[in-house]
Image (cartoon, rainbow, N blue to C red; front, side):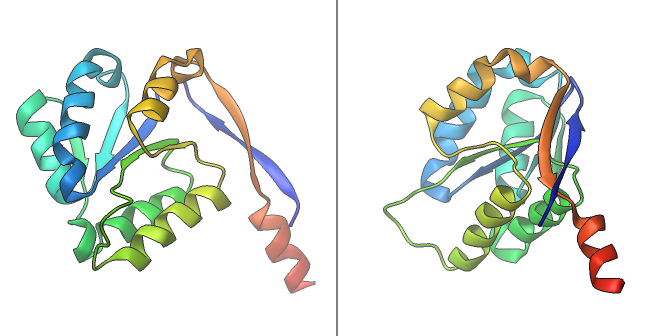
Length: 152
């Protein structure tokens, strides 16, 4: 498939996700970076989003809980070009019942070239990047071109 570009605006749309064993770590991380995150639009799976909003006062657009379809809702937003980056504190040592949804979310992030941080170190790199508050062009699949070729 050919590629095209998409412009991420200076104010990003950021997805926040955490497995149960990592929610407190993500909450602590969000608290540490609250001032920067306040300049962006935040999305999260249900439980994580409600905890973050309650504890930090940040506005969070909450999806359903991950196991109830929240991961898939975020994946749909990614496919629609509505999420610019994702912070996903996942627990690689514990399997979760909705593991196929988690893998699908990570896969769709890769397909649409969405930057993903999966731990504190990578999240710190992303939040510290000057690109966080700049307009950025990223390559994405040329889905319209793909459709046009199939319909010819």
